[in-house]
Length: 201
Image 1 (cartoon, rainbow, N blue to C red):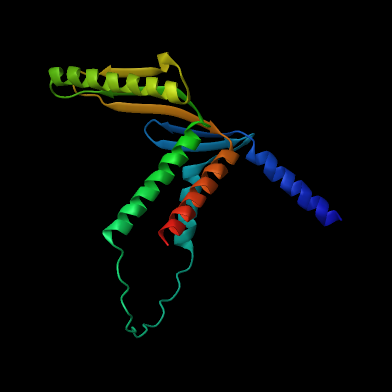
Image 2: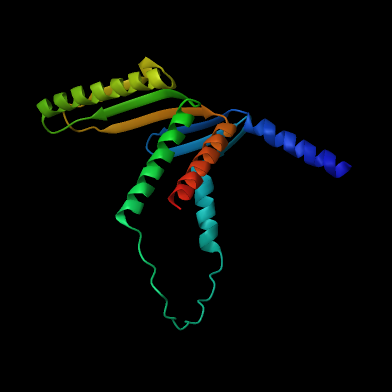
């Protein structure tokens, strides 16, 4: 009976975690930093990856196995160009539908975007400034129209350097979503992949 209570409590905890808000913060200013936070639990993704890589390097290496005699194997026939095209179309469909599902669920907040750029020629810098400004504000308008996007206009700074001596970039972006949405996209993509494989048979 106690075991059932423990299993029930774990199941309830997992369900609660799936519906909590997950904050993913990406920032860059001299170096990249990616942070994930759920409630009061926060961890740095890159630091975790570096630790795992270091742990893998420090692990004792296995001795290479004795070379085995290669057996003759029958070469399998390669897929036709039509199979390859169908596979590409399937992957494209999975990515498109997955992004569409997730894009409607996530909330994006741009807290800082500072770009300073320049070229050796002042006229080229002016043309580049016009193109970058149009592209940046066009992207912001597009995100505001098709997603839950918020930003502080004062935090968006695009500055041309007509002397061509300075170039810098800084960004602070936060994405908020629920883990259940990631799970939904995963299963949707998985079933689409299985459906595509079964359709080829």
